[in-house]
Length: 397
Image 1 (tube, rainbow, N blue to C red):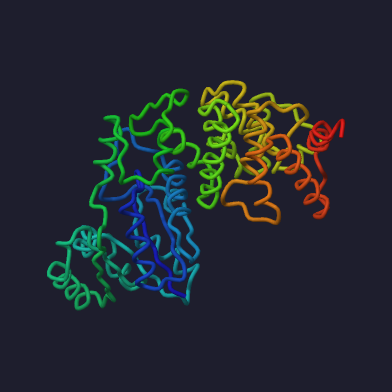
Image 2 (spheres, rainbow, N blue to C red):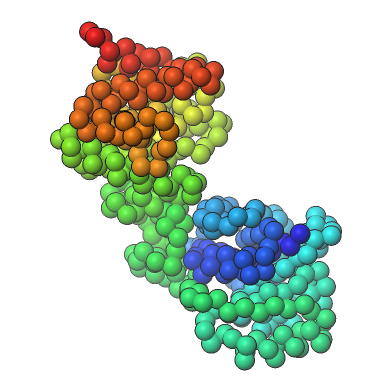
């Protein structure tokens, strides 16, 4: 198995790092990629106002999820846990014990490659792993790489591959930190990584989360969910706004509710329950054990207390999974937009999409019926609010 090892301070991780990882993984035909945020690098000083180790780990995990590779990508904290300075040779020793028979590839940029012989225990590094160096700019080509590659091969017996990455983002994390502190939104940062930075006030951003523009609100929301969930949230926003226009509802409230409705979707049960305790959320017996139901209530709390959303938006988020009797128009819009947005694909969805622009109540009732039928077939308990919502909409028939 070929395993790529890409380490760095990642303070913050940016599109240049991501492009390098993606291209190297494909050209080397890697079977696995390991991303390793550095502890205390021997060649760098800790930046003032930078992220701590746990935050760099989380940003790297967000970026890893956005790489779109078809191979496993793991983010390791082994250097963050190590006391003292963080040496690559120590990291490779640990990984060699874990992967004794696999082919290890150490990935690095031009600057690191050109000084590799000066690193701590360079012979050990090149014995334990093959080297893949990628050029940061078009000038970092064969003319620059060849002498160093020949030297490392003859002097240390290194196995070296050098590649030039077309269109690689040539920017340093130091520059990004300066621009962030100046109030810029650098395009070199992945949207979700930028959202994480805003949420945690890193690098002098100090954003007022309760008064964000739409792009920044999306970035914050997306930073809390998996990459595979983002198309659904985008689709829900698109559909909610269209339905708000059709049925005379406030477009901004519909948009905000849709953007934030799944913001706590990927928290585990323990994390969900912790938020419930923090915000005084009262749960029924089913909600205490069904993590899928909890994200609606915890998401509503985050929308209210973290992002300053009005009550009607928070209530729509609260009921978007189960529904409830006598829903408001906004609550109906979010419920049905979530259920039949463009990425959804199930029997009957096209009928639902046609119906919702003719009769909102009828569409919500059909959605509830479909939900009850699906849950029953799967042997999953139907929440009382869902059953009561359906009875409310069918009374008098």
